[in-house]
Image 1 (cartoon, helix red, strand yellow):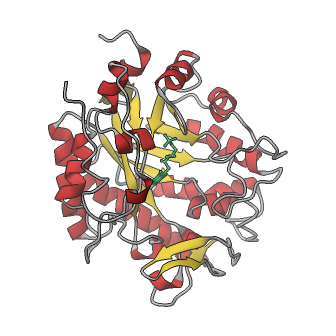
Image 2 (cartoon, rainbow, N blue to C red; image 1 turned 120 degrees about the horizontal axis):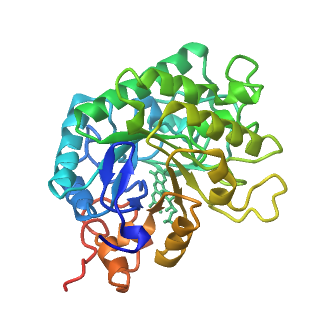
Length: 364
Ligand SMILES: Cc1cc2nc3c(=O)[nH]c(=O)nc-3n(C[C@H](O)[C@H](O)[C@H](O)COP(=O)(O)O)c2cc1C
């Protein structure tokens, strides 16, 4: 067995991972087809990266209502389930494990995606961000505050998506509750001024996440469910922090202890927060003592820093985004201390094989 902690196997609540390197969810916008399905090209891309201990797919839309970016695959139709079967088989054939990331963008969407209708949000507050639609970059609008009925329907959409993920052969699902999207919008005061059961108190703002977990446990065992959170995000993707933000995330993380999840997946701050009075600058260190289960940490890690965070026991697994995007054989490269390919930002979201499946693997 490998002596280096990064390459040691890990038992993820019953799912055996061959190492502690996770491929972080990466939107690649390659489903440029009518039905928004994952294709054989998608399967090739993920298969190339199947030496990761665990792959978390790109964010995948739980309904047409969830859509906020062009050419993103969904997981709400039969054709989409068939597309994902190609992916899960390709990864399993190489001995990999793969979770589907379930996504709803909320107010970061645009009427261009909804026949002119306003996007859903906790409250009618414009994030003043840009949305990328068929018409290029457009300004976000003031969204519509969801009715209780619409919240319940959205929870059902997540449940349906989780059932579809099981049918498609995924090893589990990750609820995308981070990065300024729908759940995150419920958690923060900047985007949630509701006065009903889904706003006001910390417990109420977190309610949609726990309602969703309670709903999906009917279709998937909770030891196959992860939750992604980005607690210290400020002035980014429309999110602003205040004095209640970190206590909200502490409440969420502590309460998640009681659910027997596969993991929580946290990110270090995407943008510097040293000058933000309410922020926590070291996420893994801050939240590790609060959570007893598996903690995945992400953002900006390399082999050395990933090894350190695992050896310090501040996290159990490390997720790598851009390094896996550009290096299909990242595990081998880290094992052999080989150089890494450079990522080409120009092709992060462009259609086709270029910048997707053509990053070279090591030849020796
Ligand atoms: C091209 C690209 C697409 C991304 N798409 C997603 C996504 O669909 N879901 C998500 O939770 N995060 C997404 N992220 C964030 C990554 O998961 C990760 O947090 C980020 O790249 C930082 O990790 P890294 O420093 O290892 O790259 C994306 C990042 C990039 C660069």
